[in-house]
Length: 325
Ligand code: PMT
Image (cartoon, rainbow, N blue to C red; front, side):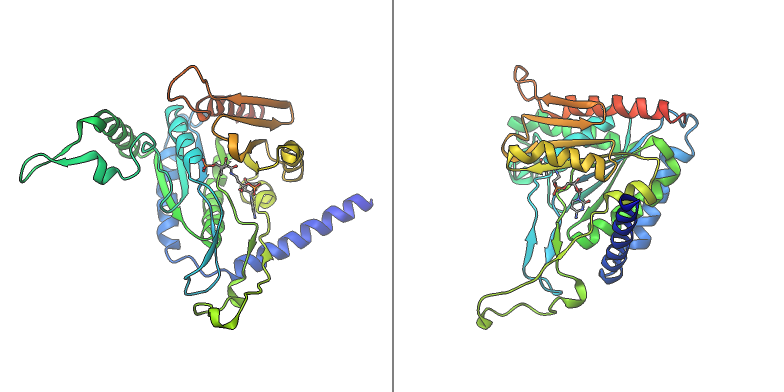
């Protein structure tokens, strides 16, 4: 009885915190445009599709959210993520036949651009004679592959990219996506690889102008960002297959925290990774046990996302079969 009361109290507090987070967030500038794009994307990729059992849509989140310290923002707190995991995973989901909504941090790694140099514009192109520009032969293969694979996904209409910068934008857009994917039932998946801020400055308490250094050391109290995972599972898209990530720098607590996330937020899978080895291996935690997924070190240029997405797609197929849709 006490446990039920505790859980009811936890839910109530969470809903109050979530409401207060959204009520105090600066409104999204392009909310109508985002909703229009989502509606069109879902209609094209799912609703008008003849065989709904084979059509699947995944929302991949990627990159870190920022927490502004001033309303006219000069300074902000950032969360680490290059966006590599999300971009690579998007490519493999598209290859596996999924349509992908890629919710990404502006300026982070993009699908099909992983094999290009850091400054593709300046490094991939050369002036061949006075008026012509050509691709530098060193990068020709990589450029051809990136352009053809990206264009094919865009022309088929299987890839929708939506950018964010702040924690306010990220959570508001995630909610719009989840509500628009609700009708897809178990064919929908959330693959939450973005690094999401845990603390923020509520908009109404935030100073408008640049904080002045002449006032001396800065004392600041940050509010806790409510975890949206349980509300995503319970209310926004209750039938969707949900995968969250757990990042730690201390391996001793990693699996314990991943187990906790699986149970507390009722995730279907939690991908546990450690900062320094995240490109080599991840541990997938689910109710059926733990599986370590490695990059194939014997294959040059291999990555951990390829076997990871294979596993995720298999589990999603089982989930769709079990839920009878
Ligand atoms: O981008 P790369 O450089 O390739 O690195 C990939 C990665 C390490 C960023 C990625 O693999 C990863 O682990 N992403 C999740 C990082 C993270 O925020 O972990 P966390 O333990 O703080 O959060 C756990 C989960 O809760 C996340 O799925 C997050 O979406 C969610 N969360 C977090 C905070 C919050 N307030 N609300 C949330 O819903």
